[in-house]
Length: 82
Ligand SMILES: [Zn+2]
Image 1 (cartoon, helix red, strand yellow):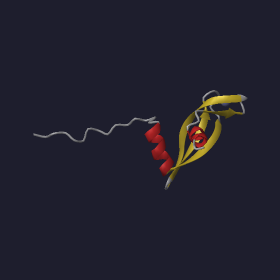
Image 2 (cartoon, protein in one colour; image 1 turned 90 degrees about the vertical axis):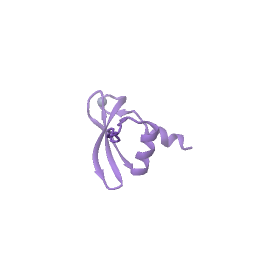
Image 3 (cartoon, protein in one colour; image 1 turned 90 degrees about the horizontal axis):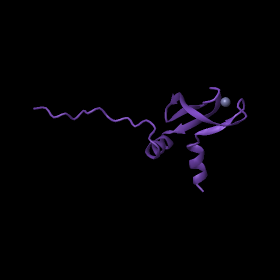
Image 4 (spheres, protein in one colour; image 1 turned 60 degrees about the vertical axis):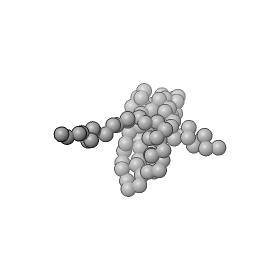
């Protein structure tokens, strides 16, 4: 039952009215609000906005754990000084 939600969240293609078909989309961070972020979905075919989505802090954490799109490693802060 939660699979649908999951698929919706990880949707990498959305229907584009210009392209008249489901197109792969790019996620763009639009706005950062306290507790949630607003994302814009851009069609990779015609670069028009095909949708937006709010991602709460909890969802974001879950998404990052499931699909780390930006595997950002921490800078090696723990250097051993002699
Ligand atoms: Zn398009």
